[in-house]
Length: 183
Image (cartoon, rainbow, N blue to C red; front, side, top):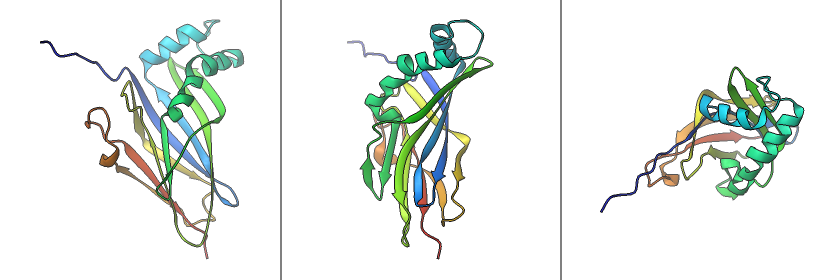
């Protein structure tokens, strides 16, 4: 009997995360996804209606409604744990889509307020599609801390075999953020 064949992934994304702090502590994450040229061209074909090679304001809204908003059902492919407890990503803000030299980029903000304290707060963030239709890899410079100077803040990236997916073959990369009030 023949075995079923599947060809995944179909979409490739390089991801970056700006970890945003305000006066109280963590405010959220500004996520940037840079897509492969093939997927970028498919979206451009559908949404760059005037064919000028970039997304104008109305076209960005079309991308948001027609290609991005359904990711809400999947938590925007983002998993967050605060002190080991899951934090459900139910909405995002400030979505934008750009098209430059045939490459599409999404950017959006995930609100995630965590107040700084005298003890260390630990946040784990990973981005992946567990169906592996989309491969989300961290870019070579994946994290930027913004406004973290007033906190003892740090980050590292670690492979997470405990959350392996796609038949246990793929291990997501966790961005681990730690911060606390400075004395």
